[in-house]
Amino acid sequence: MNGSSFGTYFKITTFGESHGAALGVIVDGCPAGVPLSAEYIQTFLDRRKPGQNAYATPRKESDLVEILSGVFEGKTTGTSIALLIRNESQRSGDYSEIASYYRPGHADFTFDAKYGFRDYRGGGRSSGRETAARVAAGAVACALLDELGIKVCAYTKSINKYVCFDTKEYLAERFSPEELASLRNQSPLNMPDADASAKAEVFLQKLREEHNSAGGTVECVMTGLPAGLGDPVFEKFDARLSHAMLSVGAVKGFELGSGFDAALLTGTEQNDPFYTDDAGKIAKRRNLAGGVLGGMTDGSDVLFRVAIKPTPSVYAPQETVKKDGSSYTCQITGRHDPIIVSRAVVVVECMAALTAADALLCNLGSKLSHLEAVYGIKK
Ligand SMILES: Cc1cc2nc3c(=O)[nH]c(=O)nc-3n(C[C@H](O)[C@H](O)[C@H](O)COP(=O)(O)O)c2cc1C
Image (cartoon, rainbow, N blue to C red; front, side, top):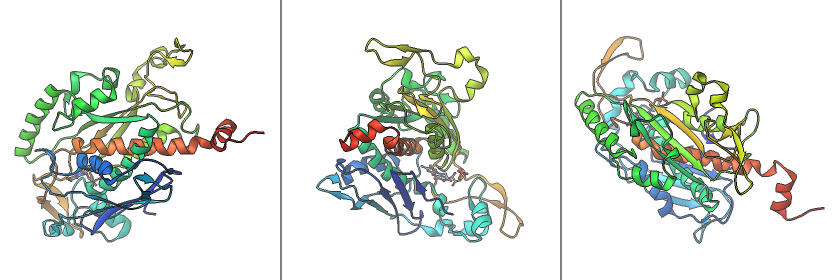
């Protein structure tokens, strides 16, 4: 089992290693008629690629996407969409020493335990570079969601102890997705709060000098999702979302709505009261549930956050062992991000979009009226 696929109807299969010839993805199940171009996908990849700010790895990759199939005259054809990103900056020499020992915090040991053999150049399939293929696929999902008025916006909420606006609240309670994206894009760390971003920059500079790294959190809001997406048991919307998030390298935690704080609340504090709004629509007075009840979306914004660990490749000496078990003090070289969080923002956004696109397609057969509407037939 290599588990390179995600999704049921809107399904992606990624391939490629960081130091192989190319990375890529097959997107299967995207409906025909969605406007799509390489330029549009590129805007997403440009947000992920290295060298975007002083804290991202200086590795130079243009991450140019090629659409090999599934798009004709600017629209998806309904057949499989193949996207390719060729690798350009493969300095395998930087990584050759890694072959002999296990880097702490990396998948070297577990790769050997599972396969008995590994591509040690930059982590192979476990490399952060693998996420380029997910981002390309996620851009396709975003193109579909955009046609339906569904928006997904992620941003850096915190880096170490530097938290946007010093609040535990979701920033989506204060700002629209457009405002959040605009504030986020002004920060080299993708933090919508300029003050927190400036403080985090100073902190990261100090950590860099100490040959260390930091972690943080990414928050995400999804607006415009209809109520009823997701299933009540194993395929809960939140279960699929957490699967999507925890499948990203370095993501160590996931919470929906009040998340772990729910354990500290009473029932009346946690339950979101329902009411009927002026337009006669059933709504909720607040959203501690994070937009999902019983595994199905409730029509309010989906709010979630993920915790991302510090970059495991630190230049400080670390205790480890060689493959034969002999002790070894390693000193990692090569090119690595002192912070992953800011580059992971677009990855979170894209994995959320893929989850939503798949849930929309999976839900088409949930009731008779859907089939009547889709096929335009009725008894
Ligand atoms: C966008 C992104 C970029 C990453 N860049 C690096 C990096 O430059 N150096 C590094 O050591 N790890 C990086 N990682 C993290 C490793 O891929 C990950 O920590 C490692 O494979 C171990 O997996 P685990 O943290 O899930 O246990 C990155 C992850 C992501 C999502």
